[in-house]
Each structure stands twice: as structure tokens, then as C-alpha cells.
Amino acid sequence: MNAVPWTGRARRADIVCGVALIASGIYGLVMIPAHPALLGSHPLLLELISGSTAAIVTGGANARIGHASIELALLFGLIGTMMFDPLYWWAGKLWGRNAAHAIAGRGPRATRLLARTERLFDRFGWVAILFSYFLPVPNALVYALAGWTGMRFRTFLILDVIGALMWVGLALGLGYAIGQDAVDVAKSISHYALFVSIGLVALIVFWQMRSARANPPDAAAAG
Image (cartoon, rainbow, N blue to C red; front, side):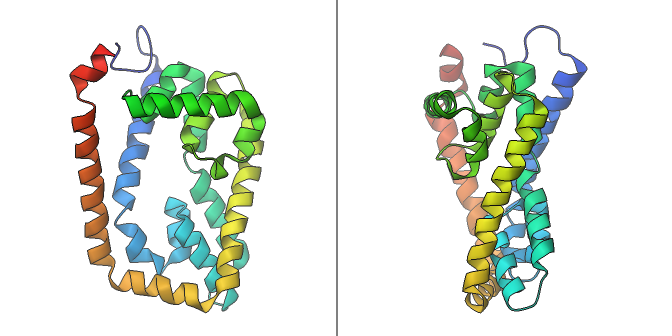
């Protein structure tokens, strides 16, 4: 089984996309400590750099009490939420089914997740892109499926923007409705940011170690 998602000699596009996928994963891990640290003090910045749902809700709450612009909260939430979406579509276009394995892995759990995503996409098609933020499967797999099944990038991008607008709008509306209470909770989380960050990092490390034990490389290669 190939250790890389492409077949044959790597093209420049393969290398660029592969490096970008790895970088996106590292970026997500690096952003973990920033979530509790910025949530109470700079929620709009956190929206922009991470697309965090909690940050979007807090941005809406800050808009309610006059501490932020609702338009800016919407724009930053949209950018942060969609940051890597075109990358997953591109991976699917380049590598087909192998793109999903590059994103989700090759263990039994990843295989089941991919099968579920394929069933959803086969059944709903473009609607799955539109409501991808609400589906019980990772968005990245849905977007990779769109790429490898031949969906045009312009079509994908329009559907993704509409879907992201629905998701961000819902989260902003929730925060706006809650108002000051959501701001107070966010500030409390930021107050204990160091402890929350350490706990989140420890949880991620534990989960990664557990997954590695459950799906050792030899077993994955044999499958």
C-alpha cells in the first residue's frame, strides 16, 4: 500500500497539496491553545484564524452588547470557517479516493467513516455540500468527495459559501440572542486559559496515542 496518496511519480501539484494538508493539520494543533486564550479577549480574531464555533457565538454576543461589529463578526467567521475547504476539494480532484485516506487515515474507524460519508454524498449529492456543517461526518471528507466525483470548483465554492453562511449565521444569532451571559462565560474561560490549554493538549496527545495503539502501522499496511 502506498505511503503517499498519489500513484507513480509525484507531480508538483501532488507535493504542494500534500504539504498543504500536513500544514493544515499542524496549524489546527497549534491553534488549540489559542482558543481559550483569545475567546474572551479577542473573539473576532479567533474567528478569523480558526473558524471556532465558540468564537463565532461569542462574537455575536459581543455584537449584542455593542463591543463588536456584527458584519465583521460574520465576515471573519466565514473566512475562518472556510479556510481549508478548497484544499480538501483539490486533494479529492488530484487523488480520488486516496484523498479521503490522506485526510482520515486508513484504520477501521476511518474506513467506516469514509463509507458513511460516501453513502451520504451518493444519496444527497450537492445538498451534502450545502449542509456539510450540519452533517455527522467531517466536512473535509465531503469536500474531497466533491473533488473526486468531478464537481466543478465554482459550483463547490458557491455551495460551500452558502453552507458556511448558514452555519456562521446560526452561531452568530445564538450568541446575539444570549448576549452578556455568553461574553461572561467566554471571559471566564480565558481567565483559566493556561489550565484549559494544558488539558486540551493532553487530551489530544492521549487520543493520538490511543489511535496509534489501536491502528499500528503494520496492521494498517496489511489491510
